Length: 235
Length: 255
Image (cartoon, rainbow over all chains, first blue to last red; front, side, top):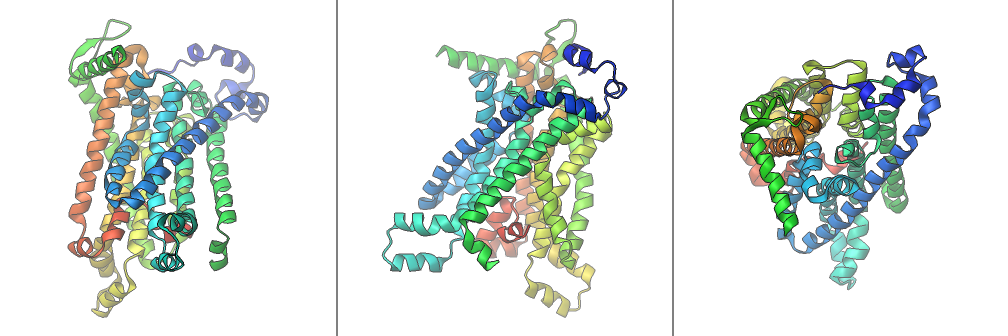
């Protein structure tokens, strides 16, 4: 596989002639300052490629987890299926889906959603399981029905574990979305792919994806702190 | 109906690519067939295996040491958090731009990728061995090294293997983007559609997916084989947790 920079990006090369640093594929703050606007659209594509799959994945996995919470025998099969999906390498997955969904956002979003399922499902189940038996007994003693107990006791107590799963799913998805360009969905990975040996490009595009992962992670952590004040009190 | 047929047709074409040579899209050269897929697959396996061996050799001793001494919890845990935040692709591209191409560099990226899960799991597995068991071993006159080798290591085995399993899957997956660094792995037909066509890409994707699933299942079986009988009998839920390849919540919350 050859990477012919000129063939791949003639327009980049024209802008890049002149300055020695850029011509040598170096790390050039000036070039970055002049060109940061080319990363804005890919960045927001990347945000979309992260938030949408995590959102859909959460809806599916959460529903599955509630089902499996009532019918425990479902846990094994669901873990097995989502686990197999999780194991398929992303590059391959983006390709395997193309006969069905073609090139574009749909393929990327379906694949990325599949990767979030196992992580979120596993954490919701673990969270619900770790609710102390005393708390459930107390709730039963107060006359709560199973549904009331789920809503008012079990789910609130499972929130930290649930959000921990959401954090892992989000950072993982940011990373996997960097390959979504193979499914024709753009994102920061597409920028990496355009000029893979130009240091300035790699630092900005790669750095932005790491930054995105860190920011989203912190946001969820903040939400977790806000909705579970009792965790802080005991710590 | 016609979409279903087209769908099956594309998969049939891809499977044929795996087993039978054909002319490339541009013409002139023969591509595909078991010979080429075998070569690409062999390189893929070689670089993954090399990376896994080095990663295990580095992280298991460190994890055992830190876990036994109860030191460096922050390091052992946060290494996997940081590892998750830096995507494999980004890491590969960084290496490409700053270090260069070739087998050694791809292997290095894969090693860096494989270390965090193994290190964290070894640490957590070693650490979570009951104090009473360790005290009993010490009371029997075992030295520190003996405790690590005959008590902590066997009891931590399931957790360590869960880490190895996670790492192996991500290493095999990431080796697919090896062609970016001029290493001809199974990613080659996927990343060069102008030569291999869509069937080639799909065929290679099928082989990669199959290989990963087999490796995952294989390590899963090994994991059960190395789990001490005592743990299998005594620990229902906790063993399940280890099998799911996640550190326990208590440790994770500590970061």
